[in-house]
Amino acid sequence: MKRIIGLTLALLLMIGIIGAGTLAAYRNTEPSPNNAFAAGTLNLIVNGVDDGVGIAEFTVTNANPGQTGAGTWTLVNAGDLAGYIDTENITVTNAENYNAATDQAEAVDDADTSDLTGGGELAANMDVVLFVDDGAGTPANANNGVLDAGEVTIYSGKLSGIASAYDQNLALAAGATTYISMTWSVALAVDNTIMGDSATLDLIFELAQTTGQ
Image 1 (tube, rainbow, N blue to C red):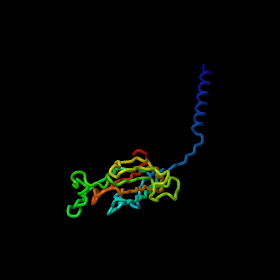
Image 2 (cartoon, rainbow, N blue to C red; image 1 turned 30 degrees about the horizontal axis):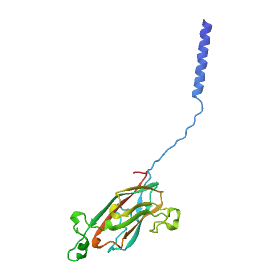
Image 3 (cartoon, helix red, strand yellow; image 1 turned 90 degrees about the horizontal axis):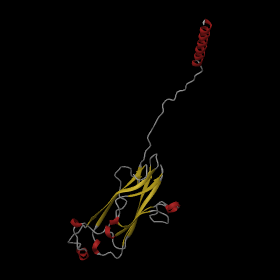
Image 4 (cartoon, rainbow, N blue to C red; image 1 turned 90 degrees about the vertical axis):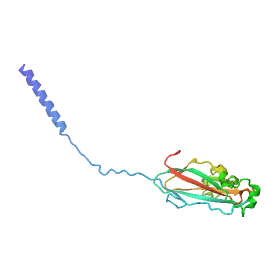
């Protein structure tokens, strides 16, 4: 019995020694300090302006039947992240600007010269084409104000019929530039109905991190 107890104590002592040896094995540590995180940015600059107010691309005066024109918005992603361009909050406001003393000719063809019942007819008689003027793979065709083969049309029709938003999801890498142009024209067949009228187009370009925002 004493021999069994002695063997048991010896075995327990050996286990303790082994355990103590395990706890004393080599160790080495290295620190990883100052792990930093910084958020990236999206920053859209339109026609060189980055103030949240913007400037008008079109200031057309004395538009008349047979006249045409074009303008281009230059869009730059000045941020650190890639994003997608959409056009939103599009509105068209019409005005008659009728002056009975000077605009008698308009009244001959326009039965409604009052702003109170819808305003002027210029937007309804102005044809516009809004498109991505990126050259469609041909750099020489970019930013030329012409709808070239392969370029994406956003809207084509009367100015009065333009939608309030277009989710074109145009990819724009960080530091990249693209162009959106619009051509306009008034058909020669349009009569005195538009004389003296005006139309104002407002729109917002959005640069979003993901599509469909």
